[in-house]
Length: 221
Image (cartoon, helix red, strand yellow):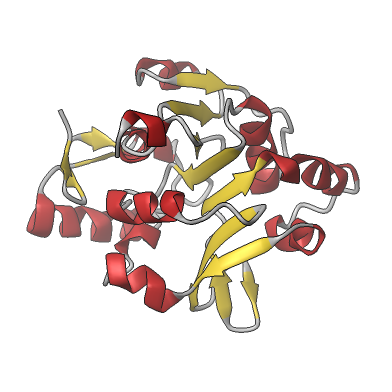
């Protein structure tokens, strides 16, 4: 992606979670000798030159990008997204989670390249996860949000309604379906999470057998 394209979007890694199931800060856990946070930063830096971390902990300041404190503590993912929108330099913000070690740069770039006729661009796939409508999973931490969403998100936070998809009814949402996703990421590895040790071990095994310490075709230096 050329420099001009990278200037069109901001990108944030949410790293302020409690990591209760893991029992330690997931962002600093290593796969292939590389912290999960570094993997996420590396991936999104391929599509944006305004990259920052949401979640201000001392260890996060050593990864070469800006770090901002969560403006809405104890409001979960929704507060993290709102903080990202508040701090972004661009009108659109790609938001990912720190515990997604297999982010696919080509898929991120494909999302960024989509026409900007939305307030939210979100991947949707079959399955049962926390953010779902019917039998579909809305991948809200692998999505692009316009800063125009911010007042609607902040209104939900004031109402103590923290479900990420709750504000979708107030804005223009465009989805990309599973077929679209699989054209770029056939195994949907981008959406692998590491919420506990078992999931971390599975991700680690995949990295060892397929790409070593590379991130989906991008080698860390």
